[in-house]
Image (cartoon, rainbow, N blue to C red; front, top):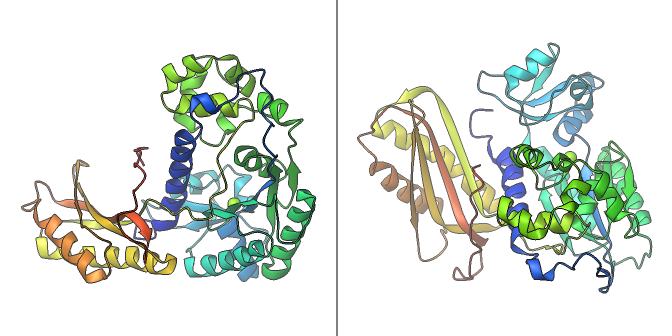
Length: 401
Ligand SMILES: [Mg+2]
């Protein structure tokens, strides 16, 4: 998927980053109960993490019977393409999302590539969110196919969260023909970990009683918020399981993992105090395109900015958000890159204004020091489109995405 369809995979990555950023920001070390403190002196929350099974691929198999039972990858098969989603039949071969399409094809020669249809995924996503809304207003989407629900006090007056999860999954299947899995627990971290336990089309509960033991047994590389690089660093410190992590003092984790240390210290004990935040919006929306031929001419490069700005703006309109910072990314033929950004006093209200600023930013690096291989346009400092623009933005953390 080299061209422009980069928003949703980026979205997943951005969500992950935002989630981790939030995780790092919220549990200050002193709020994490010490080892022997009873952590449940606050009312226990009931959190459900709902996750559609192989979402994009399942939608394609639903809508095209010829794809059923076959290894399917949603994404581009071109040289620089990336797999956005893989069907379970493809996963058997080791194909997974974010894998280069070339690699995927090597692992599974019969792999069928299907172009993504994001408008369909968005409308299915809307259907499932309407079902969630029958149970609780506390819905925090992580992406089109995943959300946290806080059902502690739910609109149906149902006591048992596992029954709510089962009912929601049945309704999703009835409405969309698609299966979902669910994790039920007393915080977001554990609910997210739980939804992976019985995939596909299953659910799993982690109670306050068995939460700590569950985390102790789990490999840290499966932890939400621990990416491959962090897992590798933890391994060097002798940390491979939740129990290994729990054995390390807070100060040690902070020394070696910086701001993440406190988060890791908490989750090793099954403690995660992040709330389900229905109003969370992403921090940036970006689109970029790698050209089949490198570009040297300014006018041609400007012409390439328009479709990128249009994609960004369409996304913003669909989600009723806007921002006041435009960033243009320029990657050159030698893979070096430059970024130029400008922030307005208030949110952009028209695509023409975004384009005008993007053009000005691009002009500041012309004449190009090398032919241009890729251009990107990002809108950040996002708020809901109608909101006043001086509501303090959270600091953006750089996760090298
Ligand atoms: Mg999913």
